[in-house]
Length: 484
Ligand code: GLU
Image 1 (cartoon, rainbow, N blue to C red):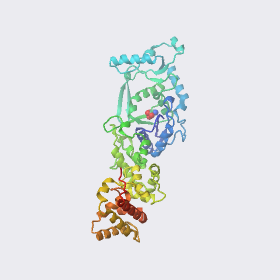
Image 2: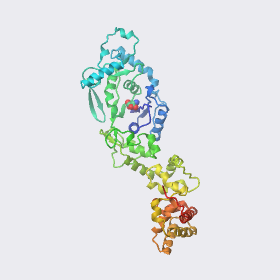
Image 3: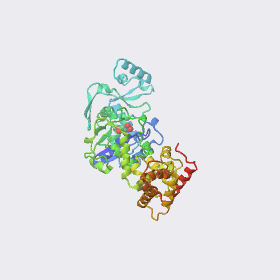
Image 4: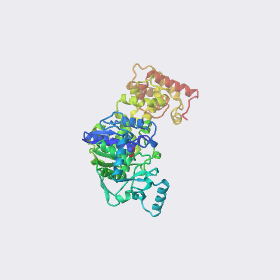
């Protein structure tokens, strides 16, 4: 049975690269009717960030990713916090020392820095020289009480090949790898060592992770071999780069799942966008559910060149989902944004109706909230350009005339309101547009927005009439506030 895992270190927020890796693992498991495991790699206690693990789990859940085994749900291969697997790491480390495949290294930080400087001067790749590798077992230093790290005895020659499922065989010269560290001087195992034992003991069949780990994989393979453990298959998914092909970072905008949520990107849209970063479906479609993606997903359609992050496409995807999702779901997603913008929807049009009115024009939940705000509060300011264009001359009289006519309508809907405008235009001998523009400005404070008759239908008769009159009076009394 296929068993894959996502193994975040709780040292920050859930980055979109991590979310994408988790998503690929999840889809791969689903596609092969296997299991998806979440393991929290919290061994490096110094780097732990308070609340990070909880935030990451929450972020994954928000994207619709569910795990079959993990720290919160348990499973047969626990514990799922790496720190709780320390005894096993220790035992394996001892095994490597006992079988002379690893050794204690007493070199100090200064000595190592010195060594690195020399290598740099000679333009050699930086790696440990192997000085302590040659110490005999009866070297008095072993009983000196001096701190030491444990290093792997990497074969001095030969190659280690990573048979990558996405990019094919990748060959590393052992000579270049150097004797890497397995455990730090306080005895804690480092990533490249602990990950091997955990993946093996959790019966992971496929390690699918970011390309940034490709150079770690030969080291891990050497550990598998030294301990005589069966190896999983490896697949390294492409990096996500910024449009300028540099590493994606803060200066390119939001990079964490949390930030996208705050910006009003729907989790469904983010998920859909992320799964296209490095993978393409076998059919000409970009909008798909996770279930559909799981049916299609396999590693053969994962590209090996970098995926380029494109915020415009993400926004496009988001506007597609704003149109697609049920109004009730959007109403729920919108709540925090309504709160942030102090929009109180208790008195005023039905929220779902309001959303239906403006969703075609919004790219984010922030814009959606902005778009419906006018329905729940009278405009306090009016677009300056609009005032210059639409509020001159006879505007107040016309607004008042419209208000009178509209107040008499027995039925209030798009068609009856439109008819009233047509009649009024005829009576006043003006084009309908000459009534529409000042009306929109009077009731919304803006010059653009949804179709006037649609929006008046939603706003309601009483409120429309009141706003038209209020704007007329404010205009006449010269106390109309332009938008700053
Ligand atoms: N904890 C590692 C990371 O977050 C896991 C890498 C792996 O998947 O092996 O980068």
